[in-house]
Amino acid sequence: MSFNFPNKKERESIWIKLGLGAILIRIILGFQPQWCEVIYSRGIYPWIRSFFDHTLGLLPFAAIYLFDLILVIWLIKISTHFIKSVFIEKEGIRGKGYGKSIVAFFMGLIFWFLFLWGYNYARIPMSEQIGLEVPESMNFDAIWEEAQYIKQTCIEARQKIPSIDTNVIPLDAYPSNLEEVMRTSLKEVLKEYRYDFSGHVRGRFVQPDGILLRFNSSGVYFPFTGEGHVDNGLHHISKPFTIAHELGHGYGFGSEDVCNFLGFLACIRSQHPAIQYSGYLMYWRYVYGTLMGFMTEQDYQIERATISRGMHNDMEAIYAKVENYPAFIPFLQPAVYDVFLKVQGVEDGIESYDRMILLVSSWRKKYH
Picture 1 (cartoon, rainbow, N blue to C red):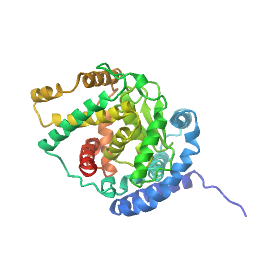
Picture 2 (picture 1 turned 90 degrees about the vertical axis):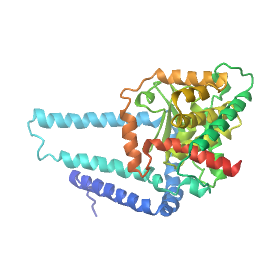
Picture 3 (picture 1 turned 135 degrees about the vertical axis):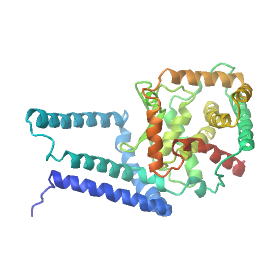
Picture 4 (picture 1 turned 45 degrees about the vertical axis):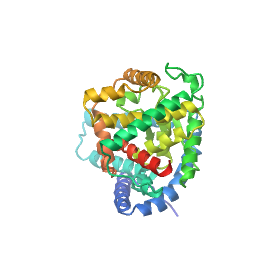
C-alpha cells in the first residue's frame, strides 16, 4: 500500500479549506460561548498550553526569535523564487498560481491562530463567570469616587515599601525572578476563581530595549509560540503589571480588559510591597486617564497635583523611559489593533483596555 503526499495545489486547497472551516467554527462559537468555554477553553486549550510549556517554553530564550528567523529564511526563499521566475526566466506572474498561494498562506495563519489560541475570544466573559455585576459605563461621580480610592490606596501602598522615600522606587525593590513571581501570583488568582491554572506560561523580556515600544506596544502574546513578551525597555515599576497581563493571555484570555484585571489582581495579591504598589499605580493611570475626559484641563491638573510626591516622581520616571523609544509610526499600531480586536468580537476595540475600571470597581464592591 502506497501513500502519496499532496502536491502543491492540493496542499493549498487544504489550507484554504482549513482556514474557512476555522472561521466558520469561530462564528458559531460567537453565538454559543458556553460551547467555547467547555470544549475549547477548558478542554482543548489546556492541552495546547501543555504542549508549548513542555517544548518551546523550555528554551533559554524567547521562541519568537526562532520563529522570526524561520520566517525570514522562508521569505527570502519565496522572494528569490519569485524574482528568478518572473525577472530572470521571464515566465511572468500569470499562470503561476501566486494568488492562490497567498490566499492559502493567510488561511493557514488564520487556522493556526484560532486553533492555538484565538478561539478564547469567544469564551464566556470572566465577569459573568465570577459573578460581577458590571455596568456598561460609569458617570463622573463613579469615576471620581474610584479616583479618590485609588489615589489614597497608592499613597498607602507606597508607604509600605521598606526604606522608601519620595525618590523613584529603585530596581532592587523588585525580585530578580519577576516572571516566576508574577506567574505564581496569577495562578493563585486563577485557582481562586476556578480557572485552569495548570500551565507554565512563559513571560519573556525581549530585547533590544524598545523593540515593542517603537510599535506602540509594551507587551504582546504570540499565539504561534505560546509565550508572552514584555519590552525590556519598560521602566521596572511597569513590568510586574505588564508581564502579568501577557501571562493572562497565555492562560486563555483574549480580552484586554480581562487581562488588565488579572494583571491588577496578580500584583495586589503578591507578597512583595513594591509589586502591590505597581499594580495599584498602573490602575491609577487608567482611572485618571478616564477622569481626564470628564474634566477641563485646568481642573484635571489641580486634581492631578494632589497625588503624593513619590507617585509623581514614579510616574515621571515611567513616562521618561517610554519617551526614549518613540513609535516609528505612532498611529499605525493602535489603528490596526483596534480593527483586529473588533474582528474578534471586542466591540470597544482598543478602548477595551480601559474597561478594566468597570471590572475592578465591580470587584471591589463585591469583595471589599
